[in-house]
Structures are given as C-alpha cells and as structure tokens.
Length: 192
Image 1 (spheres, rainbow, N blue to C red):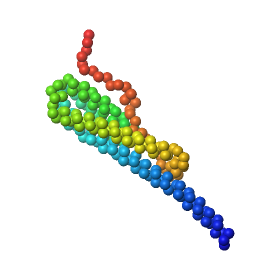
Image 2 (cartoon, rainbow, N blue to C red; image 1 turned 30 degrees about the vertical axis):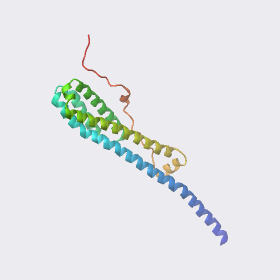
Image 3 (cartoon, rainbow, N blue to C red; image 1 turned 120 degrees about the vertical axis):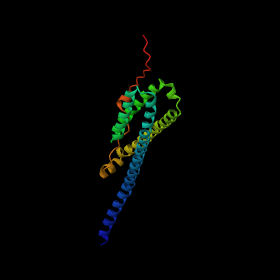
Image 4 (cartoon, rainbow, N blue to C red; image 1 turned 90 degrees about the horizontal axis):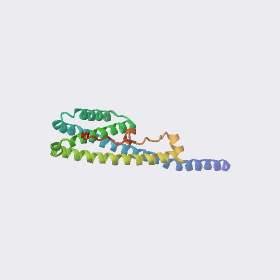
C-alpha cells in the first residue's frame, strides 16, 4: 500500500504544479483580452461621438456653402461607411476616409469667413477636434493592449496556453494605406 501511495502523491504533485503554472497564464490571457476589448470599445465610443457630431457640422456648412455639395456628399458617404464597418480593419479604413473628407471640408470652410466666425460652427469644430484627439488616444491605447496581448500569446509558455485555450492574436487598428499620402489641398487659386 505504501509503495502505491508514493506514485499517487507524485502524480498529484505534478498535476498541482502544472495547474499552478497554467491557471495564472490562462487568467492573464483573460485579463489582457478584456483590456483589448475595453480599449476597442473606447475607439468605438469615440468614433460614434464623431459620427453624432458630423451631421450637425454638415448642416451648419450647408447653410453657408450650398455649392460645395460634393464635399458634403463625400462626408455623408464616409460617415455611412464607418457606421457600417464591422471589423477592426474596415473601421480603420473607413475612419481614414472620413478623416480625409473632413479635411476637405475644412478647406471649403476657408472660403467662407462668415462660416468660420459662426459660433455654432466654431463650437462644433472644437468638439470635433477634441473628438479626433480622443480617437487618436483610444487607438494608441488599443494598440498598446493588443501589443501586450500578442506578446504574451507569442512568447513561451504563453503560446502553449494560448494554443490550448484558443486565444488568438488580436488585430491592430492600422491606418488605411492611403493615409501614407498627404492630402492635396487646393484653395482654388489658379495662377497662370
């Protein structure tokens, strides 16, 4: 009986040792995954804030710049694309297109000094600028969370725990490839 007891104790000790190594790693993955999810929710929160501000900004500009319908249409389309984006990459691409459309809107505003001085437009512009800053910070925080998660998922022994429990690497919130090019700004002053 004593000879049988020693192997059972050794097996139980080995199982306890393995569990002591796996449980903290698993819990670490759960915690990091929640950090990634929370960071992504902050991006979505700020993108939604921007989506909510844009119609008011567009309506304010419409009152002053009826002939600038193309710019207004591009913002409306880009806003719709962002609202319909489902994946991180789709949101990043739609976000880049919306940012470009908003940049063109600001160029249009330069042609309308009375619009620039409008209190309503100024307030909306300030809110939009603040939101753009919040989006940038939220993207940085999200990507930092993804980096930490992916680092653990790729390093030993985390890669073994990730593989066993199905923790897959997360996708970064990356800029649209078109964001590499500087936007073309034209103030309509053709020189001959």
